[in-house]
Image 1 (cartoon, rainbow, N blue to C red):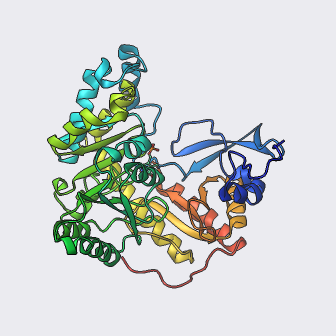
Image 2 (tube, helix red, strand yellow):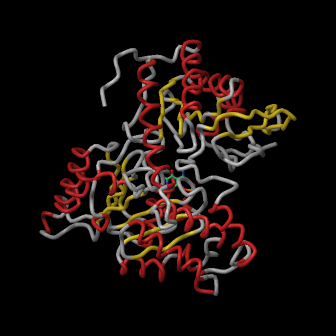
Length: 443
Ligand code: PMP
């Protein structure tokens, strides 16, 4: 019971919680469902009963063993067997799970040194530093780069970790329309004009913050144009490759690989290990001087325990495989398989009449649903028919732009893709989801 004092506001009250209380309460089982398996090609999802009164989900005995199109397991490395799992397991025996300390305080092992170097080499830059959490890699390190008196230009669809990181910098933040170069240039021009009367540059630094692949839209950043603007207006670029590293480009090296750009042109390369690497944590990469700066000044490195070594070992093994250091072609086969699966799924969904968002090469494949209530039906009906998908609504998307988001994986077989397409085709008819019946674009 809340105290009856005028002006008292409960700690947790906000518009968002009002919305979630009233709309999402009835469809709560579509999120937070416990999983009882690895996030592989198939996944075991536990059935639960929603206890509205206590805001909790009660587990039942029932499990759905379904095709997994929800996890960010782009290259299929979220495996429980194979060389990566073996090397991580061996590392637990040799180094234990945790280093218990930060890098500065005997928490920096030879495994970390190997990881930092492998990441830098894989990306094609001078140096890299790694952190135990992708979210914190952004949010805790952006304040090391810019602060008061600086201007930060952020894509409107940037991830929450970038938004939080940007706010924590204390710089002036201006948001530009998603992937819209005209709007970005307009904002850059206007910002520089602000210094005219005094005839000097009004900002200490200008940082443009973008992602490689946007995880709700499936769009790919217009990096070549951004780099031109960066040079023209003497700004810096911070690129979050959480969804593009491993998943994009002929060698899986992300957006620069995809566009054929020298990675050294990007000032700060950031990425996470949770997705294509089937591990956890994140990296920052770039010039030697930049990484030295982070080693000395990053609060999340200096005051927080380093990456658990077995996790580092998993990432090292994945890099060895995808860059062919293991002496096989297995890595490149996975990269090609992911690209094929992505293009096939996108083309077939469009042919069926779904409105599919994003770039044809993006392994994030969202199709629009609009209605929150339809989201719930899709999630439930898909599970019953053998398919696990993620449905996304407010606040991750605008309230009326709910969508189903398929995450493609190299672990999906053609048979799985066809079965999934059959299920989605049925659901599309039953729930009236085929909003576009136009001929799909030829690619
Ligand atoms: N950046 C982006 C663009 C992301 O989508 C995410 C999470 N999905 C993160 C950072 C945070 O990464 P992690 O989940 O590894 O903490």
